[in-house]
Length: 89
Image 1 (cartoon, rainbow, N blue to C red):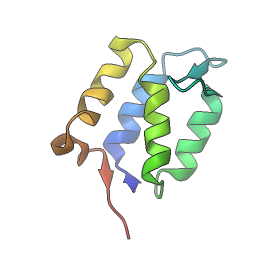
Image 2: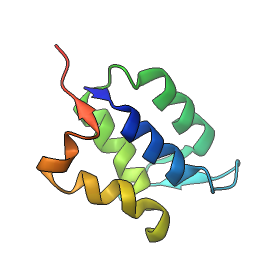
Image 3: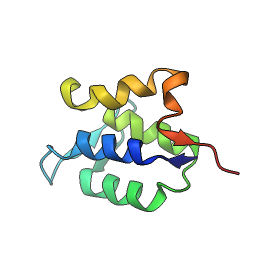
Image 4: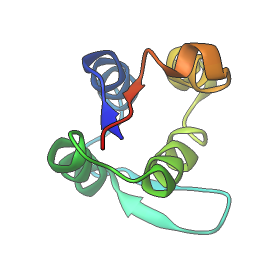
């Protein structure tokens, strides 16, 4: 999949207010440094497997509601997910 500009914009909006040294966690017990997540998304945005997007989203889902809501609401619906990703061959 390819992340659209809208996804990257919303992604940066979500994480931009977090402290640089933040460690993000997901429900599976995984953790990642915020800067590592940002660098990962910046390098993989043009071609990222679905399972890796799911993992990125699992970290975002644990960020404060008011910050994560704009992106997470689009993720919740198959109709609106097309604004965030393009399928590539």
